[in-house]
Length: 601
Image (cartoon, rainbow, N blue to C red):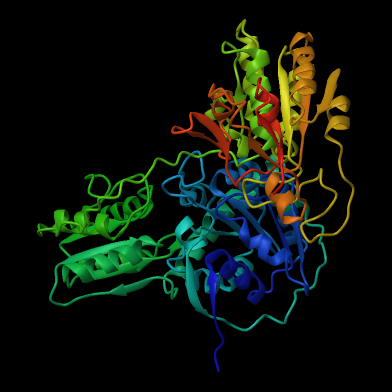
């Protein structure tokens, strides 16, 4: 009797790791991948090791070390995290593994929570590694054990590429059995494989190329790739991953009886592609983001001397950006094959929805820090920022740049050394500082950058789901560990001005920022206050605040602060505080007329 369970895609992937017998799992939180390790770490009974690492490169190398010792390992991250891990990725391709290793890199088409929408399949091609591209949460779960199998068979790491719709979609899944076997862990000294000096690397490259072709042959008949040839049709559609679900639904709605090839593994199955090209006169390739499959199909057609007309992104029928959906696929199919595309059904509504720009939470300490920072460094100050909740400081006018994890400090250094005369104050979070900010601070101090670095320590990795970090004193599984001191690290890296402040105390925080601005050299201000969401979850209750209508002059200074808990009543011509108030008390300090005060909840 089969067991079924309704679960999130990332939970399904975690289940796949369990079913596949994963032994060492490491990663760095990044939406849309975070829930994989969150799920594994929350399990009460574990026969595997799981950790949140300080960045993706570190996590990758932890998993690689386990895999060359013979274990089945997994590393998780989001697509931009693979950039951080690309150094070991490219060389591990040459080294290979002894056990098995899966590199889970979750892509984010349409940038739901990312600064770009790069395509991990390109990394798989670049690194000559097999790649699995699931089309449903069920496939995502079931592919993981197969990815372990393939990795072990060829002693090469496998890349696994879920997208946001897979990771954060929910589905009713049929569960499989949990692997009971565990490979023996024993590191073997094999210098020609594990020591990638030039002599060994040169010898491994042709070997890796041959293994890649062997993997292509193995995946030719993979159940994840399905070909349906229609004898009465001379048109075909080739699609991949989650896009294949949209393409199938679009064909159904259009009543189109065409040949169909679903591709969910890479390198692409050349035999199945050739069969499609030989059968159809015209083929449309439907895939999200880069034309990975499309380019391969064109190469195969040229190599085989097949003159089938191939359509896709090159003809701008399928967009090269953003997520696909059924309507987009219907439009592409209709235009490619000369059908009349039905217009999308749009229901007119009289309701006009209000704008909902991204905003920091009510009572978030980052808002207070940005408020003081802007006051001290002024409108001409330059404010590079980083990846995290505090990126939303753009609403406060105190975020001028956001590039990638840890770049706020290094970009500030570059702006300063370029000759900029205005004061520079950058912002970075505690987890991001541990991730890649430490190197940037060391570089700034060493090269005498006259900048202020604000480390916004809210005691958690908040943006991605409140995962722990080295400053918190607990691991991914909740065990107590050393709480690393950010201030001690900064001093050890050579910063002479390092001070902590409570951003809810505006007067004290302003004094610290003014002294930091006046300091010659690299100064560090650590604004420290726990995340308000974590405080609420822990049961900590603070006072609430209200407005004395008789004292309020309607100046709107508190409203301009930007806290969602503060509103302006146009009828009363007065400010008011709603029930979202967390009791931080910053608005009371901003009010010059004493109109905001503590009230009973």
